[in-house]
Image 1 (cartoon, chains in turn orange, brown):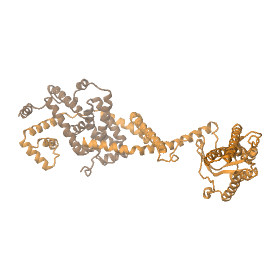
Image 2 (cartoon, chains in turn blue, purple; image 1 turned 120 degrees about the vertical axis):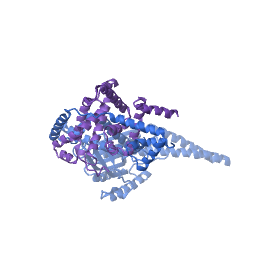
Image 3 (cartoon, chains in turn yellow, orange; image 1 turned 45 degrees about the horizontal axis):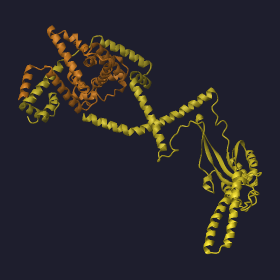
Length: 432
Length: 204
C-alpha cells in the first residue's frame, strides 16, 4: 500500500501487457494487497471495456466506387500534367493560403533582417564601410582608387612605366617653386616690399588686389602625356606644380550593369594671375569636354587697411627707437624695449599677411583633373522602350542577386534564434 | 521489431507505384473500413466521414511516391488519415457546430439493426456520450485513445503513425484513460458495486 501512486501510473500499461515481467509482477503483488489500487484497476478495465463497446461502423456501400472514381480522375490528371513542384506549390498556395502568406512574410522578414544587418555592419565601428553591399540608385558612382603619389612613392604608380622620372621632374619643379616662394626668384614678380609705402606699392592687377582661383576638368585620350604636357605648360607660364596625383578611378553604371576603370590625374598648379586664363585655354585644348570655373576674391580693402595699419606701427617703432636712444635709466630702457618687442611682433604678423595677399593675387591656384573619356555610350541612359525595359530587367536581376544575398544573411542572423527556440520547444515537449 | 516484419501490403504498393490501379482496388477493399471508422470517430457524422475517407485515399495516392517502405503501409496510411482528420477538425472549429446537433446523431444503422429496439436507444445514447467524452480530451490523448481503444493498434504502430516515441504514447494513453475514468465515474457509467466500494474506500 505504500507505493500506491506509483502502481496506479503503471496500471494502464499493465492492462495492455506492456510492462516488463518484473514490473508486472510487482503490480500484481501490490494489487493483491491494496484495495484502492484494485478499485482503480477495475475502473480502468471498465473504462476500456466501455470504450471498446463502441461498435465498429461499416463503410456505406457506395464508398468504394466513389473513391475509385476520384482515383481514376486523379490518375488521369496526374498522367496528363505531372504534378511536380509546380503542382505542389499551387496546391500549397491554394489550400493553405495562410501558411503561404506566413512563408512569404518569413522570407521578406529574412531579407529585411539581412539588409538591416548589412546596413548596421557597414556603419558599426568594427565594420568596413566599403565592404557591405550597397544598392546604387544613382546612375553613376565614381570612386577614385587611392593610387596617389605625391612626394615620390614609387610603387604607388604601378602601371605607369614612365612614372619615376616624372616624379623626379615634378620634385624638380617643386624645388624651383620653393625658390620662388622664398622670394628670391624673379619669375613670379614677387617683390615683397617689406616696409614700403603700401598705397603706392599695390601689387599688380590694375590697382586691385584680387585672389583668383580656378578649377578645370578635361577628357584626354592619353592621361600620361597630357599630365606631362600640363607640367611643361605651367613651367612655360612661370608657374609651378604644387601637388599632383595619378591613379585610377572606377565608373559604375548600375542601370546597364557596366563597370569601367580609367586612369585619372589631379594637379594643383600655381601660375601668375595674368597667365591663368591663357593656361586654362591651353589645357582645355589638350582634350575634349572641358569644363572650368574661376573665382575671384577681392581683398583690396583689407589690403589697404592693413597696409595703413602697418605704416602706423612702423611710425610707432621709429618713435620707440628714438625713445630708446634718450633713455637714461636701465628701467626706462627695459620698458621701451618691451614695448618695441610687442610692436615688432605685430609688424611681422601684418607683413606676413600682406605678403600672403601679394603672393596669392600674383599666383593663382588652379586645380586640374585629367581623365580619359568614358567609353562610347557608357553613361547613357538606355534609349527607347526596349532599352529601358532591358535596363529595368538588368536592374531587377541585380536586385534579385542582392536580395538573395540579404535573405541568406538574414538566415544567418536568425539561425541562432531558430536553434534556441527549437531547443526550447523540444525541451518543453519532452517535459510535457 | 516492426522493421523485420514483412509488410503484407508490400507487393500491392509496388504494383500501385508502377501505375497499376487495380492494386488500388484491393488496398481500398482492405482499408476502407478502418479508414471510414477512423474518420467517423473524428467527425461523428456519416456524411462527413464519407467525404473524409475519400480525401484520405486521394491524399494517400498523391503522396505515394514519398512512401519508402521504412514503416508499414498500414501505419503510414493511419498517419495520413490522422492528419486529414486533424485538418478537418481545424477547419470545422471555425464553422462551430453546436453540441445539440452532434447529440442528435445516432449510430450506424447497419450495426444497430442487429440489436433489440429498446437496447438500441440506450446503446446509441451511450455511444454518443462516450464519443463526446473522447472528443473533449486534449488532442494528443484523444488521438492515442482512438487509435488504441477503437482502432486496436499496438503501441509500436501508434508510435509510428503519430511519429512520437513509444514512451510518450504510453504516457498519453495512461492520461487519456485516467481522464476518461474520472469522467465515466462522474457520469455513473460504472456498475453499482464499483461505486459502493469506491465510497467505502474513500470513507476509510
